[in-house]
Amino acid sequence: MPNEEHSQPVKKDSFASLRFKNFRVYLAMLFSITFAYQMQAVIIGFYIFQLTKSAFAIGMLGLCEAIPAVGIALYGGYIADKSEKRKMLLFVFTGILLSSVVMFTVTLKSMSGYIHTGWIVPIIYCMTFCIGISRAFLGPANFTVYTNSIPKELYPNGSTWNSSVRQLANILGPATGGLIYGFADKIIPGLSGITATFIVIIVFILIALTVAFFLKKYPAIFKPTENIWKSLAEGIHFVFNNKMMLGAMSLDLFSVFFGGIVALLPVFANEILKVGAEGLGIMRAVFSLGSVLTMLVMSKFSPMNRPWRNLLITVTGFGLSIIGFGLSRSFYLSLFFLFIEGAFDSVSVIIRSTIMQILTPNTMRGRVSAVNSMFIGSSNELGNFESGTAASIMGTVPAVLFGGCVTLTVVTVTWLKTKNLLPLSLDDINQKDTAN
Image (cartoon, rainbow, N blue to C red; front, side):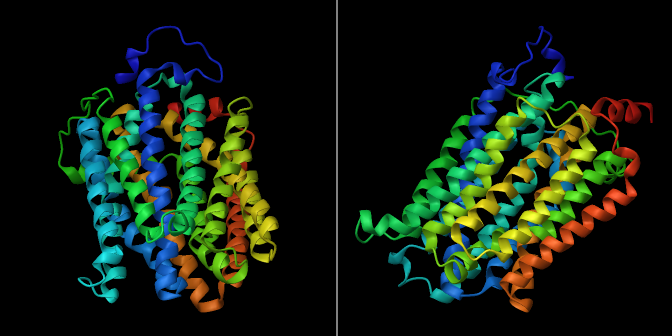
């Protein structure tokens, strides 16, 4: 197994994972692609809302990405398990780059004479669909590279750094995108915000593509002996027979699906709080700021002493902060609720990812990660679609309050059904699953 290469004694402290070169390369790649992705997500949502004035049109972005990300996720995991991971990542980043270049091109002012305005949004939807296809392969490949870059005993520490770097990109990406979008024409007259932002996005995708060349090669250790359907079924069977893993994935799926408010932030920025693209970028960034600061604290104080209990507590806090945000009419109070929402979300991310890393066999990481992406990775996009649809039916604020209440209901039902897991430590759970 690849992790057996980490045979030297491991010094355990807050920076333990960072002593492994391939893990540092992985983090650099992760930051670059996440930064670009988050910039693109925030400015495309705002751009489409400016064109259409429709919350449903924003929600459709999430659906366009989620359909392929969910539909071929299992196949992506299967390919990741039986492929060399670095080569796979290079193909994925190339696909994302080409999709972004197309969106950059159709949004250029100079293209207005060649592309009818009515075609811009459908083309963006199509390219978002293509990015969703890339994501179906990106998640499983990333997960395998990450888990094989550090020894198993450092997974909790690595999870903290992995999530912290991701959230740091989530902070800087939206904030940078919003500021460039709002101020580009003031700095360089004639340069539109959407064009300037896409230039930065493409540069960072190219950086991720370049950094990926420096990753260590990880040849496939899974060699399928049966047909693809049996291999995929093996991954699904593993997840659905692991109560802790299935419960964590399900809890995240329903809480993010109903409680996600990211898709509605352009509406809040434009019509409720009236803070424009700059304020939208700040709102997107503050959520991630709460996440990354909390994760840095978690690198010192692990939440894994009673993981299931702590997971339920944090998702409860997540739901309450959503309700607070929906009721707020003050920009600064709204930022506060977004900050604590991100803080609660970060703790649940650490708990869920650590559980999955420890309990997944090395030969099944791609397929289990694919199942996870179907539950979690695409719950954000499906949640965006749900939010946009609900807002178009019942109004923006009622949709947010409804989502927060459903999240609290999901936590309550989960608590009632999993009381026996509350007192267990991670070691207890690991031993129990091993015995089974």
